Image 1 (cartoon, rainbow, N blue to C red):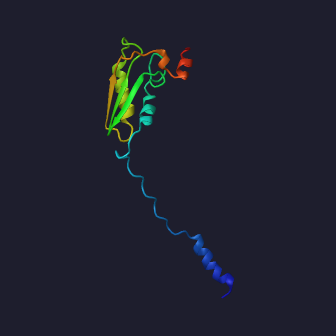
Image 2 (image 1 turned 180 degrees about the vertical axis):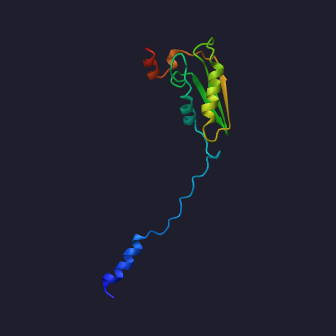
Image 3 (image 1 turned 60 degrees about the vertical axis):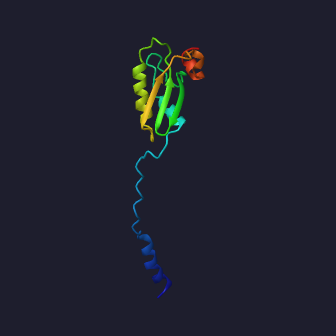
Length: 131
């Protein structure tokens, strides 16, 4: 047999792909993943002050985030104690933070001490509001 005859079956077998196994399916999202403080702050950026049109993080309204096991505790304030959106904000925090992997419960806590001041805003928020 010549080299050409030997290489023809070899070339044909190289062109025929052996069936490749399906890739392993991605594991389902599990509670073994833990949300980080950064993840929580990022989720809280979805909570928007309806009057100002800016998020609570940029406005400096989120005072603290504590993660204990699968529970997240968020301490926040409002621009003024007379602001009526407290319940709505708490619900949004539960929704957005609760969607993070590894979070089983979200506990928003509204406080007014220390009182919020415009100096607590990020520079971008100050610029957007003309400060």
